[in-house]
Structure formats: C-alpha cells, structure tokens
Image 1 (cartoon, helix red, strand yellow):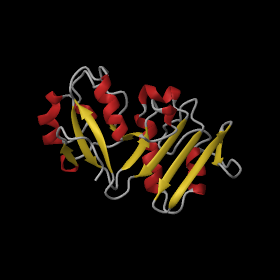
Image 2 (tube, rainbow, N blue to C red):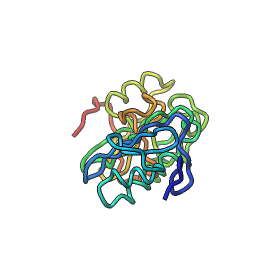
Image 3 (cartoon, rainbow, N blue to C red):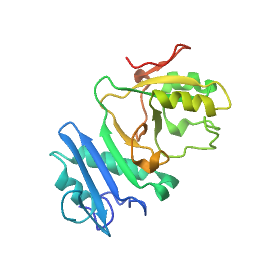
Length: 202
C-alpha cells in the first residue's frame, strides 16, 4: 500500500502532480490530490496514490499500478513540472511514430527502440534521454519534429497495441497523451521504417 504521497515502489509524485488518469480495458479511472491525500475525482480522499487508484480502478489493478509506477520512475527531471499523468493500454492495431537520426537506423532495426542505446544529439538537440522511456508521437507530431530537427530524420511506425503508454510531461504538462512515452523498450518486430510517402494511419 502506498504512503500519504507515494506509491508502493517508493517513487514519489512530483510536486505539481495533482491528477492521474488511467484507462484500462475495464474502463477509465481518475484520481486527484487534495493536500497530501489522494482520492477518486468524484469522491473523498482515501490515502496514498496507490490506495486511491485501487479504489477507483476496475479489478484487477496490478498491471495499471505497475504502469503508473514505471511512468513516475522514468520522469527524471520532467517530474518537476508534471501536473497530470495519463496512463493507458494502447488499443489493438493502434500505431504511433518515433523519429530518430538516420545514423541510428541499423541499430534500431536490429535492437528496436531503447533509450539506453541513445546516441546524442536527439532530434530536438538533447544530449541524453529526457526521460527513461521511448518517445512516441501522433501524425501531427511527425511534421512538427521534422520541422524542428537539424537533419532529415527517419520516421518509424510503431505498432503499440497492448503496450502501456503514458503522457509526456513536456506536452501540456502531461494533460494529454498526443505525445506519449513507453516506459519499456520496444522490440524491433513492432517497427516499420516509413518511406517518403505522407504518414497516414492504417
């Protein structure tokens, strides 16, 4: 069981985090922080974040709680400005996109996507992983990151069905998951290198 502020694995929420929304096959659940206690958004505070999520989530809750823990543990410096966290299990057949420098093509094709293998700089000029996870965007994000990149990056289509994704704290302070993160490496078998044709969902 979690303490007043934290989770069962000991990872504390960031100072601004006030809302966590989890979408599971059994339905959605949202909890909010009231002072040092958490509870369902439509009910009283019940205790720690884990306690509130267990009260709000359909059973079983263990996989969803593990996804929340992994998201918070991987935030790194982004935790300081995350106001909300959206965690959900991607639908079957759902796809997102990942952009990477062309010099990484062979490594990605062989090993999949793994932030521990990052060779800086990143697409947006970062000198290292901004979070412990794989950054994924929607179709609109592809155009944006192509525009801000100093090079013409590879675009990988990522089949994310069944994976747990969470919202990126740098996008709307985590209020939506148009820019999402997988807290786990993604196998090469889920990836397809896109050609020069416009990106379109299947």
